[in-house]
Amino acid sequence: MSADVADWTTGTPALLYQRCRSCSSVWYFRRGFCPSCGAADVEALPSKGRGVVHAATLVCRPATAEARAHVPFMIALIDLAEGIRVMAHGDRDLKIGDAVSLRFEKFIDRIVPYFGKSP
Amino acid sequence: MSFITGVGLTSYGRHDGRSTVDLMSMAAEAALADAGLVRRDIDGVLCGYSTTMPHLMLATVFAEHFGLQPSYAHAVQVGGATGLAMAMLAHELVDAGVVRNVLVVAGENRLTGQTRDAAVQALAQVGHPDYEVPLGPTIPAYYGLVASRYMHEFGINEPDLAELAVLMRHNATTHPGAQFHEPITVADVMASRAIATPLKLLDCCPVSDGGAAFVVSRDPTSERRVRVRGAGQAHTHQHATAAPSLTHFGAAPSFARARQASGVAVSDLTYAGVYDSFTITLAILLEELGLAKRGEACARARNGDFSRDGALPLNTHGGLLSYGHCGSGGALAHLVETQLQMTGRAGNRQVSDAPIALLHGDGGVMSSHVSMILERVR
Image (cartoon, rainbow over the protein chains, first blue to last red):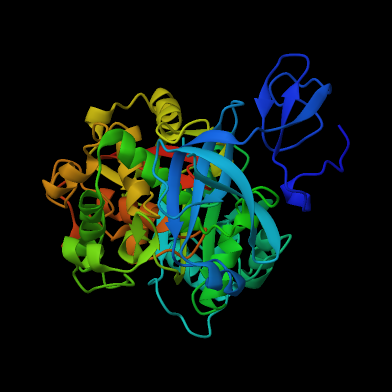
């Protein structure tokens, strides 16, 4: 894969994951090889953004002065339908087991993945 | 074979004007004196890291400052597991005949050497720089995520967790070196302000200044003989997002390796020093290690089973939650206290008898685990 994949980490409203064309493993944190089998033949795919809340915490004490204006904000781990787990922001009342869908919201000076409860 | 021949511990809390190497030196001097050794006896140095004094070569900075010219020296970085990782490495080095006396030392002016915001921000950097840190999490947030899932799975509630904070504070009230001496109740923990749900202020360890050290030797230097009987590690992930599970962690395989190396069973244990960065950390580790059944650690604490006169005394100095947490030295206080308990030198905190003890440390977000079994020999 190329190093300049456009996703939310570089300011593009998309959440990408990777898949190994050799062993079919999927994972989230991008790298140029498969962490399961070592093959270099990997592809980046966009998530459709549907998932379930696996864990959730409402952050009340921020890490930085810039984040202070946003507290309290929800950080959650979301299990996406594609088989990967991602960390994201979300509705303040998210609960474990909630079905959620992805959008992107501004946080401080960038966009971050944000999950709201699916209608 | 290797012996923990001497231990040294400063008070934790505020040490205004003291630097990282000052605190390391205070603890090292105490550990050498306790071992009955002098500087020229030390041929190995292992040290932790310091967020207030980041350096490429902290072990040699310290050795030069303290007045040592060891034949083996370097720093070790495994987050909260650093202390026990150093203890394990010191044991392996001595056991392999590489060195005779290893000084293991860590310290930091984490409280007074920087602003609280700087400390919180520095620690949050254990998150993934691209996929986690931009979301603004803190260490309590990572552990809040873990807590939410673990409590959901095993039916633990917030007042349950508070029991562990109450126990650690109770223990700290009997140690003059502890950062906190005011007793607290479950209601106090519940009323403390939210940090990252379900964790509240009193579920979290404080930021402290302090230093801790010990000497691992090939030969006993006194009649106080505490030997390292075996140790093990497990490293399952670094980042919370990449954890294989939020209900089963590396503590179990780490301890299984330590049990295999030592031949010791859970039923042999008479004292435990277990990492307690947050109440949830301690609850999970007690259960992962098999010291309590899943979901029952807090109830066992409420029942007094982990009290000084209980079935398995735990962190009698007050742990990270109430003795304090100065970074890589934080969990070394657990080891120091364990050695004091095993050698009958814990004063008013002394347990009835502690011939075999378990130590367990965790670094990152339940990422890196080190377990160690100590045994008193006559």
